[in-house]
Amino acid sequence: MRAGETSLGKSTLNKNVLLNNTLPEKKVNMMPVMAYDAKIYVAGHTGLVGSALVLELQRQGYTNLVLRTTHELDLRDSQATRAFFESERPEYVFLGAAKVGGIKANSDYPADFIYDNLMISANVIDAAYRTGVKKLLFLGSSCIYPRLCPQPIKEEYLMSGPLEPTNDAYALAKIAGIKLCQAYNRQHCTHFIAAMPTNLYGPRDNFSLDSGHALPAFIARMSAAKERGDKEVAIWGTGTVYREFLYVDDCAQALIYLMNFYDGTDIVNVGTGQDATIRELAEKVKKAVGFAGELVFDTSKPDGTPRKLLDVTRLSALGWRASTSLEDGIAQTVAWYKEYAQEVKK
Ligand code: NDP
Image (cartoon, rainbow, N blue to C red):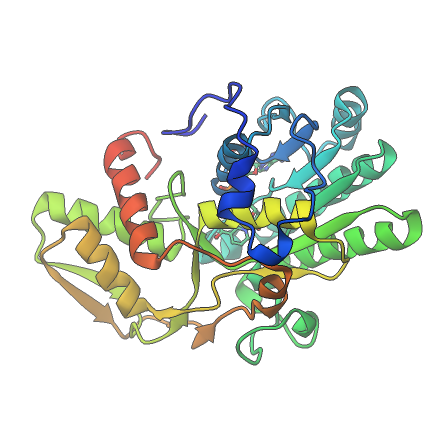
């Protein structure tokens, strides 16, 4: 269990939460496909997304969750995965288990990233088909899109150009996961959908300076700098490139929404539709952390692609939009980090 995670006991049944908080008017007459006592397997429940999914499912009144750590069930093992599905028979599956990391981890361990993610996707998707899972949601990522995509990035740009070479092994495994879902749907009439979240952040993130993403790393570095009384913190690049960030609790709501109400087989982007510069992001973190020193942009370091923003027209048309502002999301993440800083891996 990650620092700050609640126990996974029975939550209060509150069927109105979904209708009150995540459904716009035009959807209120639709019934969610998942019954509140349906057996739901959240694969990767100890991770950033999986842990938010568990909390959000419980908050919405779902009472029958099935969870396994990697130690209990390594999803790279096809026999163990099949045996688990045969004995547990989940009705719905959120496939949030994956080997995930930042640029450094991706470029140091490309074989692990492609192998683990191919095996996890293939084993879970095949076992879900063989045991009659009613619906599965596969989690992809915005890095599946070509490196030089027009912005904002529409779903149809998938496979329209070369991938970013620093994480192409990971991205290819994720594309294979999407294609597995679509191929099983075509051949076996399954109901497997795929969501592509933008950069996520929030409580229980990976705050490691080596393997974490930009936002949690900013929080960890500025908090440490504040404690030491440092005069400045260096930020890689010019700070002028644009990135999109979605609060992980919003992402969890969107994924449950798609599971309940999305019937198509096309992939769906999950984001806010808004971006900010790295400088703006760093300034917001600085304010939330209370770091009084200077941010120094190290322009000798690479910036990466100038802009990366998902087009969320498809998701918006389905009736969902993000509700947490970047300020609020950062404030909540910083508050969590302050409370659990000693326990999280750095
Ligand atoms: P985390 O690294 O936080 O969590 C990964 C989860 O997968 C952990 O619960 C981990 O379990 C589990 N896992 C890893 N390997 C195995 C295995 N062999 N068998 C069983 N379980 C395994 O990742 P995130 O929550 O950030 O990401 C989840 C999904 O969301 C991924 O598919 C990712 O591509 C996608 N996503 C994430 C984004 C982000 O910004 N974080 C952005 C866009 C998409 P354990 O802790 O036991 O190892």
